[in-house]
Image (cartoon, rainbow, N blue to C red):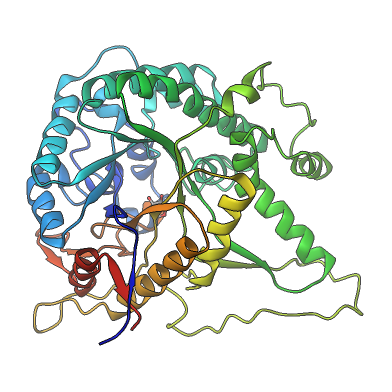
Length: 461
Ligand code: FCB
């Protein structure tokens, strides 16, 4: 018998999804258009021109999906609410049918003894708000608070775990600098930073509303962080690493923890001509204090290591150049082109906890894209996903032993789904989905995960 690494009692095991990636029903029952509807309907934005119009048809099949979760033994399920189902115009008139859908889903979960873990915003902003500037416009903060109030008033008795935003950095930079995600704007750093600011402001102002409407709940935000390593000890690589980490991670963690906006990041952006001045005109007096409103937890989405390599020629040729190797074989790379590097999770968790004293951490996403489908026996033998998860669970266990207050783990994803700009090419699911027939099959990883949950532990091998 192999040794079992036991997790603490009450550790929560779950899986995660997001509304636009699974629901479909993009115009069902009065739903309004979201920026992801608009973006995916724009030619050239998504691989193969695919859209989330139907996706996994979860809108119509949620009962079957909850049954699958039960079969897998999930203790909790992280999903997001589509703002445009509740407010087709972004604010103002409520669409009761939208609330009813989530009400039924929540009841179904509770009946199955699965804890609903709700994300309020997982990227599908109502298009009418984008038409007014979206997150770059401060009035979107008020719209988010109106939406938060209705949702938490309606479900606050039944739902006790709330996430305001998912990965504000991705919304910020993929939405406003790289343009790979909705709203698809390129090279506009001032707009990006305004969006980031309003996302964080709306998060912080939502916390007291959530707590009032959902007594005894816990509320937090979800941030993403890869493990970054410099390719060498050259000053150029180290500088690039600092900038990248500053922009993607420190910008958010610092502000949320009362440290304001990283001044080194601001100076570099000015020096590179990306913003006009270190004075950000959209930051009003008191905002930074507001943003540091304490949270009950932070969710971490972790997937991979990134080795940071600058094009600049190292100035200090005499320095030892430790180069981290990244062998290009399929064992170490998922189909997203993301490197499998479980130890990175330990570094990121330790940093979140020891540097920011975060009281409670959940891994709100972790998983791997491998396209294995059903074989002749009708089963999906996704051994690589099992290996990926096992190694990451082991590292999570190690982090807990180090003192990191890790309270739960959500595998991304419950089922194969619409992977944003990649369309349906990337399959992250524990459940395999046939997009033609909507048939679902529990992959071997789902069966293996069931064991882990039952034992509240992971076997070493
Ligand atoms: C994260 C997103 C999630 C999913 C995974 C693969 O950035 O939060 O929706 O697409 O990546």
